[in-house]
Amino acid sequence: MSKTSSSGNITAWNKNLLFLLRIIFVYFLIQIIPLDLKFYKQISRGNLPGLHYGDIFNIAHYYPSWFSNAPSFADWGVFLLFAVVIGIIWTLWDRNRTTTTNNNIGYDKLYYWFRVILRYRLSVAVIAYGFIKLFPLQAPYPSISNLNTNYGDFTRWKLFGLSLGIVPSYQSFLGAVEILLGLLLLNRKTASIAAFIIIVFTGNVFMSNLAYEGGEVVYSLFLISLAFFILLYDLQRIINLLILQKPTAPNRFHPSFFQGWRKYVRLGLKTAFILLFVVIYGFKTHSGYRKDQFQYPNQRGLPGFAGIYNVSRFAIGGDTLVYSKLDPVRWTDVVFEKWNTISIRSNRPVIIDSTNIDKILRTDQKRSYEYEGSAGRHYYSYKTDTTNHLLTLQNRNPHYATEQILLNYDQVNDSTIVLSGTDQDRLPIYAVLQKINKKYLLQEVEKRGRRKSFKL
Image 1: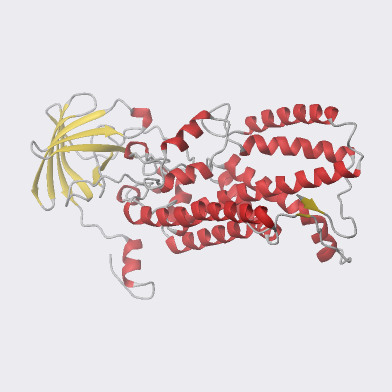
Image 2: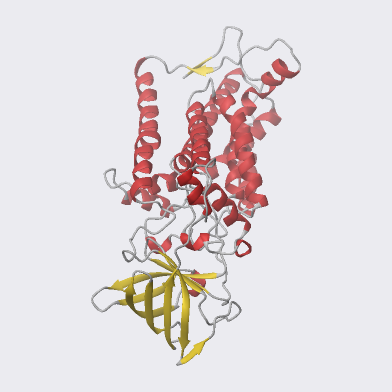
């Protein structure tokens, strides 16, 4: 399966290097090979015609978490401890063979194939993120509710996401870079170049997660560690050539699978990888961008209702409350989104949901981007009984999972809606909503161009 150059280019493995290789091999393998049965159940439920782009992304984004629902550095400590134990057992078992030339060739093979595994694992990760940026899905354009929420009511991570969402062309550029780097990783001749750029590129993502309190700190650092190990293969030669300016010979070790049946197996596996994670995933992601953007619910809302409404009159329990931004009970304004979400702004406190873990979910109920990292508003999904003009509102924040509001609606005209029913405490409420024909600076700039004058 392998051959060496005429000069006998075999890595000089000493006992310390071999012990380190064994530990690193086990350490990364634990993080790469799914040990969770739920992962395999998820794969078994899928079928190619009905495969959702989120199914492929979630497979590519898999990372083990043993102590909580989200990855943590505590997991790394356990992985390392387990790897050291296995490394010691492996070393004791192999102690009588570590000095032979044939054994060194065997470890060259192991090192080569280990690097192949890491290259493909890193490739699928960056390509998965690349496509949901190329078609701006990861950070979508702000919703009407987001555009009408006070700046100080957002967490830092939500502000980062909204800032990226308003520049879709830049987001697409970042995605194109990630896809290109992922493809370069598939060729061993360009893998080190791609790994170096990924360290810089994903290093920025890692620092952004730290600075903005994102939920992918552990995962982004994991990708950086993969890229660094891949780069390590050529790092000394790069330093000798570019920094020390010394004559540098390439490492000529490579497996001999370019002839016979091995050649076709190699091409078949590589083609299957590209077909699934590039062609099919890219096509389905583009389709999702047009029909099913995963950050927001897919179910449409009441036709003609979308917009922001001022609450001109509000009564609860038969008592009319005067307008006040400080009142925790009186509604200040109400937003109907294009999808089936209503957000209500008042001074009632909001327990912020800040999971911030990238996961693509099919069901609308679990899509949390619009309210994640946001205070100042309570977000409700609603079901409509158009015959009886009845709305059933369910608070989308998991901290308020039992909260429901039942409302009858009457669209008096194009700009006025009257709501009546019971609130979350089963108290009778009555509200008159007046639509605000509001223009947004971001949208006006896009319509007229940055060099043309306009008035709000």
